[in-house]
Every structure is written in structure tokens, then in C-alpha cells.
Image 1 (cartoon, helix red, strand yellow):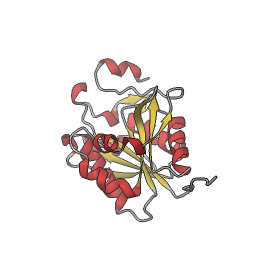
Image 2: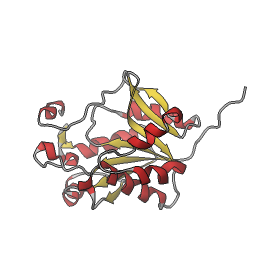
Image 3: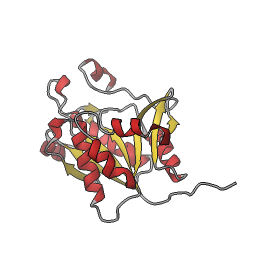
Image 4: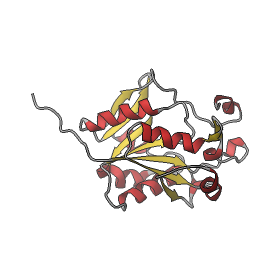
Length: 204
């Protein structure tokens, strides 16, 4: 029996944190408070604790304020001037930055800033599947695909080309669904979004 090739090359966490919180009265999601600190800090820490070698954070709404108020040591901050176009523009900005980075990583593990119920254990599970040789991996919750999602570097250009509006990589993942390795994370994470005023009650 032939064992799959393993992949030990670095993986970079890509945190999409540019949203303006339109349904939250225009409060940027990165600056929402969670456990007394900006939500973006929590999300970046989750990526590091889950095993990402580096973390890139895509900023948009109130980017200057995020830089002042959030403590993001060691993170690479990427500005997305087109953040108002939707998540797709942030994904493109992040993947473009990674593609031109020195010491290009083997893969990008993508998380969203407004999902605080997803912690380091879910990140670690998705990374473990990549380490086993898989280049397209997604967490799943009761069998339904969610975040985090990992993309091997050879897929970035095609994903970026199709990332428009708020769709992100949805079209790419649907077109390649038979190639996606799903990793069940429903026992360790809850993939809710902080989208509305009612959702704010989920933040501590």
C-alpha cells in the first residue's frame, strides 16, 4: 500500500478582517470586543495556536484604527482598498500578498474574523489533513462545509480569479467539491457568524 506524500512546508493563516459591519450599524467587525479585546486579536491568536507558521490579516474598514487599537504582533497586515465590494476582494488581496511573499508558503488557511466559535482545535484538524498531503481541505459541521478552509498554493490564482462580491471561494469549492477533503469539526467548534445586533450577545 502506498502512503500519501506528507507536506511539512509552512502554512500561512489568512484572516479576512476587512468587513464594515453594515448590519451592525457600520461597526467594523475587526474592532468588536470579545473578552475585552478587539475580535481580530482573538482570531489571529486562534490561527497561531492552531499551528499556522505565519498570519496575514486583511484589513479594510477602519484599517488605521485597527492598527492602533489591536495588538497583532508578528502578523503581516494587508490593506484591501476595495473591501466594500465584499469578501471576495479581501480573499484576492490576501492571496495576492501571499503569492508575492518571500518564502512562499505551501498553503493558505483561511478564517473569517467574525466566527469566534471556531478555535485552534478546528484549525489544527484542517492543518493535519494538509500535512497528510491534501491541498484542498475544509472544516465541516454535521457534514456541511465551513471554515477554516485550506488552499494549496497551486490553486491560489484560480481561486482569486473567481473571487467576487461576497462569494469568496464558494464557486471554486463547488466546482471542485469532489477534490475537497472535509474534516468534521462540529464537536470542537461552532461556526456561527457575528452579522447582526442579536449576534452580539454571543461575544463575551
